[in-house]
Image 1 (spheres, rainbow, N blue to C red):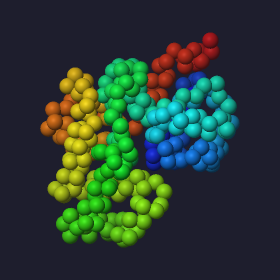
Image 2: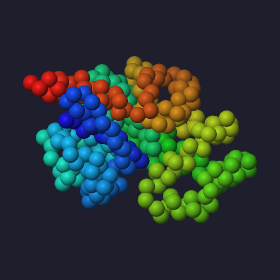
Image 3: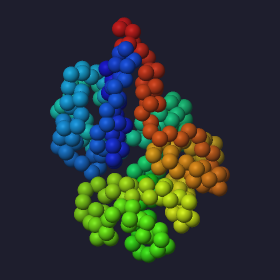
Image 4: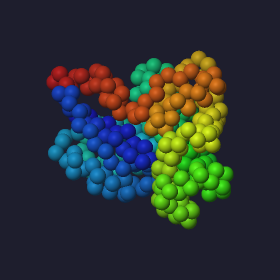
Length: 289
């Protein structure tokens, strides 16, 4: 039995692949070892996942997550799993590698994540061999939900938006300026909070000033990240809710910058399931050999 996880900063999607090819799906809060301790991750797994999986014997775990980019961060997640589950094999890798396997399979290509955060890299069909640092929502994450939310909030609180749009924003979220600042600077997971506000842009994309925020953010993402890969030879593939729901703007920016887009997915899980179901080692288990 194989457990696959696609974990972002906001949510983690889990799929349990049975030997008879049936798939069970679960959802928990996001796991990110960059922002969480081993104990916090362990407690989260116990409270949100363990009871759902307690009666299954899991052979292998493939966990692709945000913040799992260094050996130290990967080991932190592995340690949390080892305190809860018994398994023969565990793989903890970056969400970017998971996106690459979902988008490209075993073929090379440029892969991008545009969700709560953003990331990019060049995939050679086996591993991410070149990567521009994502750097997080404070000094990076261009084009992400957090970046869009940050620009939106900044423009709103500094009176850079029209009074009508400004009033509509505050009415939409029922938040005061002080509450917004408090959520960003004193409460946990500020990137999640900022990304949650970015939905306002999608709901009002017909407003030129809001469309420009999205357009400029995607332009910045391409220029500061994708331009450092061989985008003239390889298509740029994208996974993530921001890339998916703002696909029309993304395609316009890519066209204006002479970038060829490939596959655009809202989430990688279904393609990850297909990828691992096609692997020989999983077929052997299914056949009972």
